[in-house]
Image (cartoon, rainbow, N blue to C red):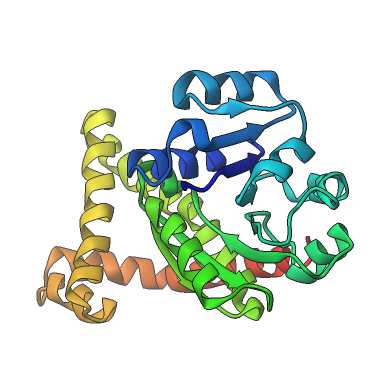
Length: 267
């Protein structure tokens, strides 16, 4: 029998996950249940994905075999209180709330018998290229974890990390699409300043980032080696690299990621 997948929260990340699961036919629309406080979010999920909408959080928790908590960190505690008695012991609960620990969620539920997985996806999940850090609690069996990873890999990659590294996941992948978009925008701005039409500048910049990332992942080469492959002696690229080094490019990125990690720890 096909499992029922529940979503509390039907925002962008929830619908990205939903789209991946439905697109890869890992679940049928009639077995997806959802709730959101915003009527427009509910209507969008019903219209686009044909899911079953219910009237409250507890109704989702009662029905779901796998329950995604896809709400903002600042409302998670309120949601946990509402679903505490509704979550069945066999249900796998997957939280995507940034900065909220397994202990926080267990305390919020007021129980330790819940199969709980804390994870941190990122927005490229919207195009099935997400990157998700995954951390289970002690109630999650190897079989449970394997099933959860299969679901999470429907919209990108998913890898298990110890909980002490979950804030690092936030800094290096959860929030990093914003840094990459800023980089793409800056490169495009420079191209526009040099006379290229903006739409074309975005296309060139974005494709360069996409291709570079794919080259790194598929070759397994060190990023420094790949950089050196582009830097001909006395050429244009090494001149650009020199400017980036003079401006503290790497240090700025490291500082930004470190600031993000510290913020995640203190949410």
